[in-house]
Length: 157
Image 1 (cartoon, rainbow, N blue to C red):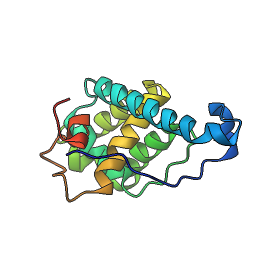
Image 2 (cartoon, rainbow, N blue to C red; image 1 turned 135 degrees about the vertical axis):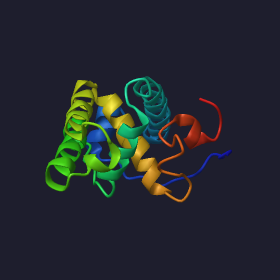
Image 3 (cartoon, rainbow, N blue to C red; image 1 turned 180 degrees about the vertical axis):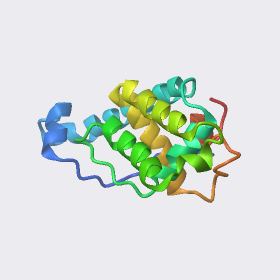
């Protein structure tokens, strides 16, 4: 899939612009373009890293329990993920659906893996799951490796 450049309207907070160093009106567009490119690159690197840490059944469980989650940029992404991971199993037993052996242990291990990540790797998890749920008809949850960069951009990783 090839995507061309798109003209978009965005409304970043003044705090976000200040943190990026966009101090004058003329700095905003070029600063935001660079920030988006850098962030996308960091997410791609982090996604490749965590592919070696998370198993396919972990990704499927994450997609299940993070569906419809509203993410807050000022809250630690690890806490946002692990809260859902732990609560979905403790309150609803959802780990039983994705982990045939030792669901309690596997959910605890997944939460531990997420907590050991740095923030950019945790955001990469969120972006992968978010991408799945933005277009769930595009992917088969149980058979596709939808969490990979290759699945998102339509070419080998």
